Image 1 (cartoon, rainbow over the protein chains, first blue to last red):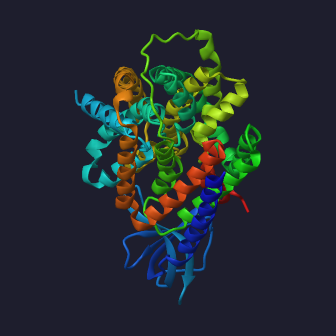
Image 2 (image 1 turned 60 degrees about the vertical axis):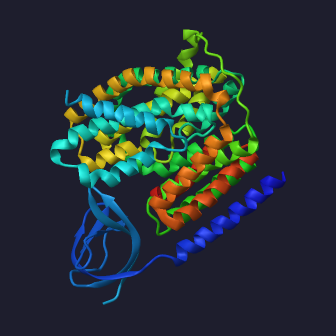
Image 3 (image 1 turned 90 degrees about the vertical axis):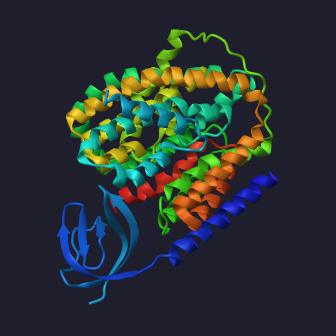
Length: 94
Length: 397
């Protein structure tokens, strides 16, 4: 019973700590849009200074075009042997 | 001859991964994926397909060995630990393993019954299923909680805790987030628990298996009925499918449940290749690696089927021989030492692949896994770590 309580409290504290880490450790990157492609379920953005493509799911349209400078946060991934970044947060800085 | 080399290499790799406690096939898939740029070329595509399929299928025949003999399952064999370990403590560990192998063999045979139906129906109904995905997953969760025989409150609590852990982990800036997440929830927590319990294994009996053929009907029907569930819905694995299957067909005894677990474990893996072919969705790590290599053609699918049959034929004697060897010697082996070595090995693997953040995730996931064990709640509720983020992703609002 005592061990149950200890592991339960530690679990709660651990999750809170991970949520805190998730909010604070993400890096924001800045880059310029080289090209932008819209499809049914995603938007793909090629960047000038990054070989990985940005992928935005569940957005059908955003008001961005070639040459815009953007700030973004996301997770790096490899899909079909190509590097990509699934975007969590995107900001247009110009 | 050229076909045989990747087949045998795949079976060898699947034997190693299946026997290594706490190592899920998804981890092996990640390892294979990281090696892919070095070994991939259009000429090697077919060999890689054979290697990955053989490895994955063999793995499903052997991964019950650590689950039964060491009490160290992965998320697919988690439910098998309890009845399997019970039989082990009665000196019937080898008997338990034979039952899961019968199940896996039933799965390979059933595959040829299920696949033609899948080929016709699934492309037609998948768009609808995809729209309803979140709601079907919510229904499945309610069903699982409703069918929980022990405390439903504790089951909900574990499910929500795991869900928050999944959401936090998937939002961390971490490589291979599923690796520490699933290893902690299902692997290291079980190993720590078994070290703490100081289990003493009795001498094992090697006897001829006597099972009435009629007893295999229920698990076979359950396999056929529930295999589409975990093949098309992300986050629902073998364990959840086994629970749903046993609820549909009515009460299963311990032996029948082990047969069902074995068969669902193998059929989920086999059908994931068909799912990849039909709807381009990868529901297992092995299917995911294949999706990164090529877009499956009909010829590729036939190659995969032939590989599944050959791997089954070769994996059965391998699993039986190894199980017999372990059963004869397990009472002589220092159990705690093995568990501690495995624990250290898993920590090193996670540090290499996911870094410090991975170790932190592993620690939290292990604590939740231990809470689940202490609560005596079914381990499948830990899959909230995958299911809750998946439901949020698929919700249409």
